[in-house]
Length: 451
Image 1 (cartoon, rainbow, N blue to C red):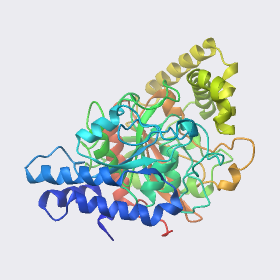
Image 2: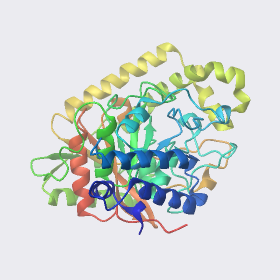
Image 3: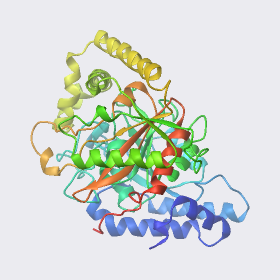
Image 4: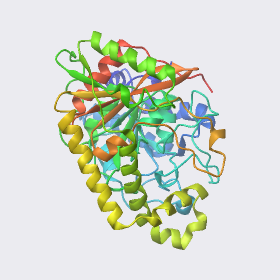
């Protein structure tokens, strides 16, 4: 064990009482990246020199009695969808190789103001669209539990970096599940906040109506701490450690149990989680959600229509430089009209209102699946057609409700994840429940084999 294995609360305590310096902590993370990332391909750019300089500044600030919050001196890494003024930002595309933006994305600015040490930029699917693909200059990020398998979403480097022990917390984005599904596949925690809680300014848009800035972290507490440093509105750490007595959790079991893709081990794991949450004091009540297919259809219309408009000119000018599957995915939006998009937004509003009226009027949170299977082999993505991973995530991009993925078990040695969904603006209750479950189980403490 090295300093890189310390959770953020423990590292923060040691930084403040002098048992650890930010420089030593940063050096430990950089050594871990050098040791392991050749197998994971999580980082596109490692900013060692600037990270050590910021770490030295954090140590100097501590010595002067200046404290900017829990992330001061803590290493963090950023998905390559967010502008960073001092390191390349390519959006995962060969079209933008070597590009260094003029300024920082808003979330990056907030991290710097919090005293965080930015280690570098993390792999993403091209423009956060489909993947993994194999016709780009960089290889896709690999799943640390089995490097022949994918991470399952565009925040691929974020999940690989956390699961592989390279960094404790990362910034990602989630438009249809791209924080939560990689977290589930890699045995990490993924938090998609309420729509708009974290500003998207300075992030390349995929679908502005559904885009969320999210987090992949090693634990629920670390996700909540990171969230509090960069989000607007109420704290996510406010209810950590509080008992679950008095909370009602709606178990949306029928939303995934009957799907032919659902692995029996996953159903057993989430049934077990419902039982454990009941033992911890929560009241469990089965609830029925609108059909998953309805959410998926609405989400697909909105994403494809908005993504095509964003890329229309660049496709016409440089379409041959896109990865083939990414080009095909964007081009599918050509057949959608503004009328189709308007109808998609109207349907999204109806689904959001229905969820609030029929479910969240009775429960404090929803329990369901994140993905229906463990991580999928890279070989399954090698064909011409796009391979879709079976998930239950896009629904809450459509409605904008916050959602949290937490490890809940294993199948054939690969991680599985459950999903908790909360009322708009209530990340605190989600983190309360997720943290209580995490503390009462041992799944989040499990680590993948060394590469």
